[in-house]
Image 1 (tube, one colour):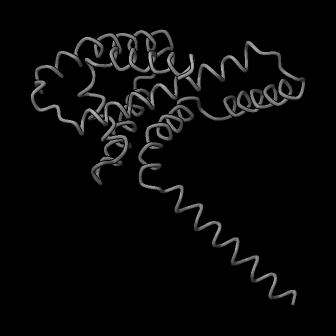
Image 2 (cartoon, one colour):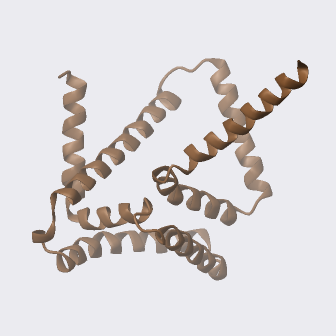
Length: 197
């Protein structure tokens, strides 16, 4: 093993150790996000919709919203491990749940390392002029979209997309859509070729 692989393994073990108190909640949440049961997609969509409907109705200032979200995060950090210990003792933790927990930890580690790599690329490495121009135009386009469309609606759409993404990938929705699209395109190409002959 190379040094970087050892460091990656060590970081993954540390992440797994840090998430150990939350393992029951993580495995349950993973099941909901990947739609283990058919109705989980509706539960995720409904919960997000209700949350954003409440945020829209309360119309909180940014400082108040940030304070309440931070309070909720600290409260959940305290309550989830305690409830996890009360609801399920370690006796019913089996190999399948451990495998799911390790898979989720691996996915979290991959996301974390991807974010770090992108951060290093965007802010620490020297960039050619073309990359700076493309990033600048992309950020300007996002700023323009944010000025036109309500920010709460944009955040709602982004949250729904991020929360539904694991389930859509797990159920191969994108794969079937791309297969259908490629079949339609191929049919059109074949029809065009026949028409030209």
